[in-house]
Each structure stands twice: as C-alpha cells, then as structure tokens.
Image 1: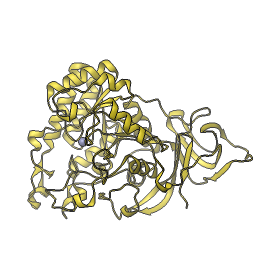
Image 2 (image 1 turned 90 degrees about the vertical axis):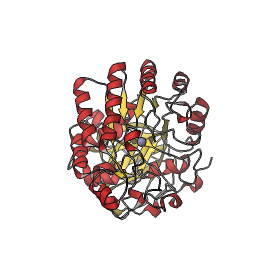
Image 3 (image 1 turned 135 degrees about the vertical axis):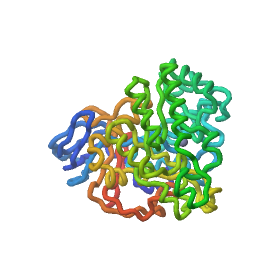
Image 4 (image 1 turned 120 degrees about the vertical axis):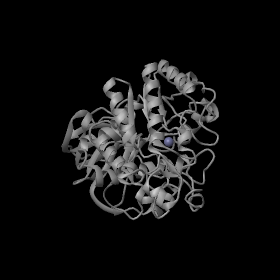
Length: 436
Ligand SMILES: [Zn+2]
C-alpha cells in the first residue's frame, strides 16, 4: 500500500540532527535542553553534537521532544466501514496528533477475533511509522457466547482482549476470559456497563436529559459494570483494565480496588475530563458518546482521579463516524467522538500543568498505555531506538476538523483555541515534521 500522497511528508534520514529542543523523559529522569543525534533510527548521542555531512538538521529551539505518545483505545473502522476510517487514515491521524503507537479495538465488521484477521490488520499498518497493536475480541464474533482462541492470538502478538463497544456479555464469560488471560499474561480491557440499566439511553441520565426529553443512561450502569469487573478480577487474581471510566461512583470503586490490591488499571478520555452533558444541549450529535458526557461532579472526580493516580492512562476512544451517520436525530445517531488529532493539544492546554505536571502527563500517554499492554518501555537514551514526539508547546491553533487526516469529523472540540501542538514524530526509522 502506498502512503496515499504522503500528506505528512514522512521520510527517512540516515543521520538526523535535532538541535536545541527541551528533551523530557520521566523514565530516564531527563529534562534538559540538548541536541539529539539519530543514526539509522537509533539515538546515538544526547548533548551538544557536531553537525556532519549528509545529515538532516532540524532546529527545534523552543520546542519539546518527548518519548512517542501511545493511544490505548482507538477504533479504526477497517474492515467493514472504510467510509469512516481506514487503517491508513487512522494511522495518519494518529501521527498527525503526535502518537507513534495505537491499540485498535476489535469491533470492526467482521470483528478482530482470530489470528488471520489480526495479522491482516497489522499488515495494513506496515507502510506507516507507527506501532499498531491489536486488542482482539474476547468472544467469537463479539457474540458474548464463546471465547476466542486466546492462546493462538497471543502467539500472534495479541496482549489484550476486549468486547469494547459492549461489556463482556456475561459474568460467566468474563470470569473465564480473565482466567485464560491470566495464564497467558494478557489483560482484559472492559467496557464496563450494565446493559439492562443503560437500556435505550442516549445521554447521561440527569437534568439535561430531562430537559431535552431524551432517554438517559444512569451513572449506576457504569458503577455496576466496574464493580463486576473488579470483583471478578479479584476472584480470579487476573489483571483488568477499565476502558473510559466516566463517573464519580465508578472512580470510588477503582480507588477502593487499588487499595485492596486488585490488579486494575483504568483510563479516562479527554472528553470526559473537559466536557459535561451541558454540551449536548444543542442536540449536537458529535457530543453523543458512550459512556455519555456526565455531570460536573463526575468531571471533577475524573480530574481528581487523574491527578491522584487513580486513573492510569489518558486514551481517546477515537470513534469515527461518517457525516451522513451523525447527521441524524440525536436519538438515532451512533455513539462516538474522534480524538487522535485533538488529544495532545487539549492535554497541554487544559490539563497540564493545572492538574498534572508534564512528567505525570507523559506517564499517562507514554509509559502506562504500553505497560498495560505489556510492551517494552520507550525511552530517550543513547543506544535506544528513536521513538519520539516533537511538540511546539507555544503553538496556538484552532481545531478545524476539515483539516484532520482522519476521514471523520465528529468532534465536539471544533473551533476550540488550543496552545500546544504535535509538530512531528520519529519512529521506525522514519520521521515527519510540520512545515511552520
Ligand atoms: Zn467502549
């Protein structure tokens, strides 16, 4: 597959000389202004470096270099809904947003539930300098009845399983999935929701839902789903990862579980950290997501949980939908918000340093997402493969969905003024840098 016109200008350089950036890596306790010399994709030297013949030299004075960001929760719609996103367009959107790695969810059509299709998906991403990990389905066909061939999938590089889009259908199946995952050293990523309680809700159950006359999804639907997952993780001794936690109630139980020694990690999305159900008041379907945007008390609880470490990961739940699908009544529109191209700017503008330091932020977008998947850490050190995100922390820009490399536009952040933007990435011995 071609790089489709290569809109980002992805290229290779045998010697890349990055000059004058602030380099920050919590893993190596690095926070310094220095040059980076990269040769054939490997960091050769950090410090003052001499230029040499045949090198690409990039002046990054005033810019920031961090280890490559990783989004633990994205939906690329291929196979099945290539009009919303393909593996190619999703990969380009990720790179454009500063991510050098993503984990794709398996709720495609057909679902990613066997080794052949997982290999096919990973293959589609090989033209791009991105680490694409597949989270395979827990149940065959995502039907909630029978476990996938977990051992065989693990042999093909899968380290996580999820029926995301839905919770694992039965507690019986979740228990067995946890037991097998535990034996295999894998993790279950649970979309925690009690489906009976959520019923036909389309928005958070509360005052806004009442005012708009829309059926609500009560917070307790998430709390129950989280509690089921936590108790089964404790019972089986297995590791569980909770997707997109959004409620104050669920967060209390995650905190309880961590104190109790249950092996749990949890993620929160930028939209649950920055928006409430008030954003739905205009019936804008790009605010319709599951779990829904909650109330201010929930949002505050998410921020607090992010700051105190109860939330381990920031993930976008990038969920593209074509305009035609979202251009319907609020009740009929599909759930989902895209996030790959806004997350970095939103985090730097609204979360850092107000709620967490840059170092803490990097733990949640660099180290922890990879740790949840059991991937080796990405570090900025001499001799390591270069896997970097380049950021202009002072760049002021307006979110303009029509400029996204994602094929979809369903973001509630259109028109937001942000400060801080990804200007390039380096990984897999290739790089791109934004023309400024
Ligand atoms: Zn989900």
